[in-house]
Image (cartoon, rainbow, N blue to C red):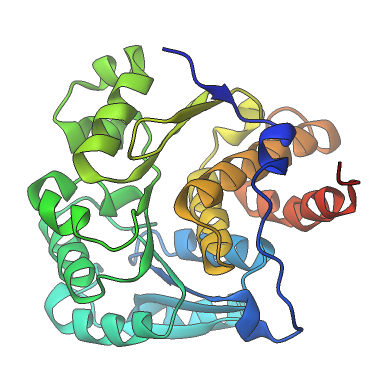
Amino acid sequence: MTGAELDAACLAERPLPTPDAGSKDDRGSVLVLGGCAEVPGAVFLAGVAALRAGAGKLKIASVRSVAVAMALAVPEAMVIGLPETDAGEIEAETAAACIAQAAERCDAVLLGPGMNTCDITTTLVRVLLAKQNATAYVLDAGAICGLAAHIETVRALESPPVLTPHAGEMAQLLDWEREAVEAEPLKAALHAAAMLRAVVIMKGAESWIVAPDGTHWHYGGGSVGLATSGSGDALAGLITGIRARGADPVTAALWGVYLHGEAGARLAKSVGPVGFLAREISGEVPRILQEFSARPTT
């Protein structure tokens, strides 16, 4: 089964919302929840990417032990320090209420970057999805793997969430062998999208973007250099920033994948095909967006 090709012409049919005024509130507010003591940088990468995609305001919620350093690293963000376990994970029961309150005032919420796949993560994600049913969610990394145990909670969301799994996370979600996902990535993405009523981005050397109704797109651009630590966090942040601007879930997924891939292609030329860093990806995005806005309409 073939899908439409994701390219610039495809995106021209799905223009991004453009703020009418100069207020940062008009560009939307993002909350990024994730990280742990061992992987604090994931929320940094995702949060900066959300701002580079055009979001107006950013909140980052992570474990308390990294909050001060995070606030200094991302001075543009409001940083929320959360209670943590002895293992350096977010403590789900006491953190949930604080996070839910922060999410109430945000236009899009990213859950999962830098969070380990464990019962604590699964519990926290389930509680938040149930408490904030009307929120625009992007689910990444540790937030994805346990969703099969809470299918109805996900399906009950007012707006389909966007999921960004790689093959290993998809295998855990579907209880498939990783080799089976890698052999038939589109089949896996179609199954997950239908099961969860979600927009699913099956990441890989080639990516598939699948809507809940099975409509799908293929993206084969980018660069081998995007297969680097933190690249997925940047992608998830881009999508969340675009959602905060008011784009629907499918549009945000398509633009996020394309911007991420195009940024990688440009870095491959300016830096080298491998060796550029995930932190450099989002810096290419404003220029790409500007070039789109400067194109003549037909």
